[in-house]
Length: 416
Image (tube, rainbow, N blue to C red; front, side, top):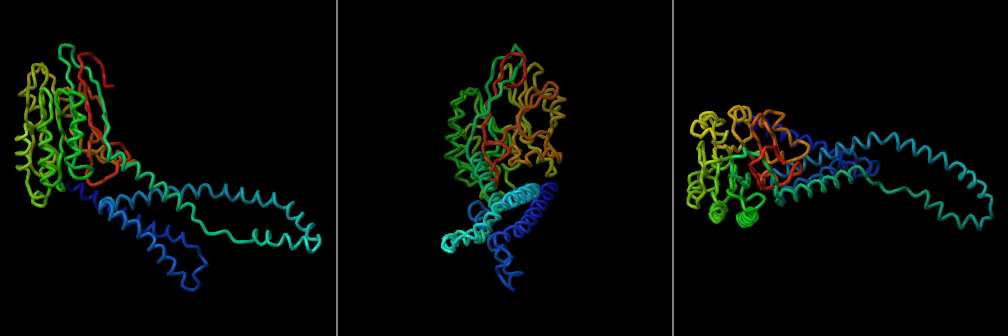
């Protein structure tokens, strides 16, 4: 928890620095030398007023978290545009001097034509006055920065609010029967969609004809209404597959402020079990003679001072000949899981890194072993999904929302 408090403080500090930087940039939309003796305070004031439109509009449209994200993105894009403009400035200046040099012969011809009759000179006067007219002030770098930011965020909003299917094929021992696993995580009900769309996505997943559906945590969070929670659990109850639906907890499911949303983790667990969902929290479930599911307690249990079973102790309950599929919300125990020799580990939590170019920051600070996609360590396959939904941030630019279909086939080979 301490690490996330540090991240929050750093984010707020970067956001404030971004606002200060943007205030100096927005001033440039207002040309110098136009405001007389009041220019020292009036021009900065106009820049601040113009800048205030950005956070106010972002807050009204998306809330405080996304407002901070938008300000930071705009500041970084603007810095990049300023750097490009700074690097390109010498080339522009050389080109400008070249153009002036090429105009000298024209000026000489203009002097010769000055000797022409007065009538001809009078005809040319309007054109000369037009040429001497001062060009309007246009802050091109600022306009480009705003346009690029808008395009970046539109793409991110589209990728967060739409869902794609991601397929993997893994080889297992030839003695095993094939198995198709549908997986989703991080729906965070109520952020990018509600229970009605969740039910529609479940129908899409059901159409892939999986043998089972696994949910790797963070199905709900603190902002999920009771109605959304209950309706989404009922939609899971309607899901048709051979082995059913299995769930492991994420760090948000029980809620950091359960009273604020009007129900606690027990009410959520009751809704799941009443709709036939198998909750696996440090528990082992034998699917058949070939496959065993292991649902781990979320790592946040330890972060809050509790304990969860080790991978080794969970495997004591498993037939050594069974292929083990581990559901572990946070992808941060790869070393132990690979050492234990489990077959496959399915995780979520990272949201695929959410935003480019900081999408790998979880790995850099040691919070996660992986951010997204497939990896193999020793004999163990690991898959991390970007999630079917999103937490508070309504943009995904480093990835896109998805559900996963994993086909285990009786053959030797890696992932496809």
